[in-house]
Length: 126
Image (cartoon, rainbow, N blue to C red; front, side, top):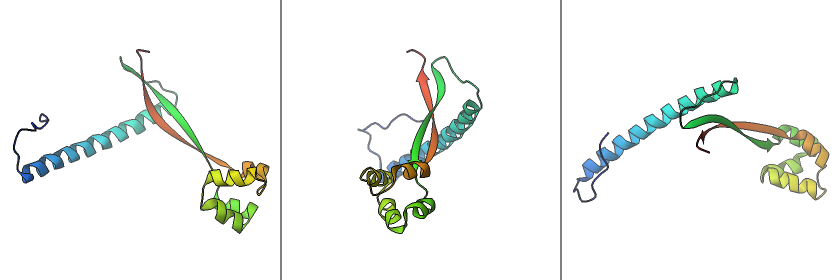
């Protein structure tokens, strides 16, 4: 890998473009490798394995997002409510329930929680 560019060094536009393309291609390759490694590590952690180095311990951080499937929402609350809530978002559907326009219990029963997992490196110096 080459050293960062010296700002006082005069490069042609073609040389700048070549350097830019090299860096972009290198970053894309590194990001693809990082994503593949993360997927393998997450799968291992999800199956109960532990991973750590001298500096880091790998953990899975789980995020949850509530969603309401449109077809089921429409079946329960009707087309008008589905159109109003779907064009806005989950918060709007919950606001309609809070306002009494939708049955809060039926809305809660309709909710689907989606989980995503992120690989987190926890410094071991804490």
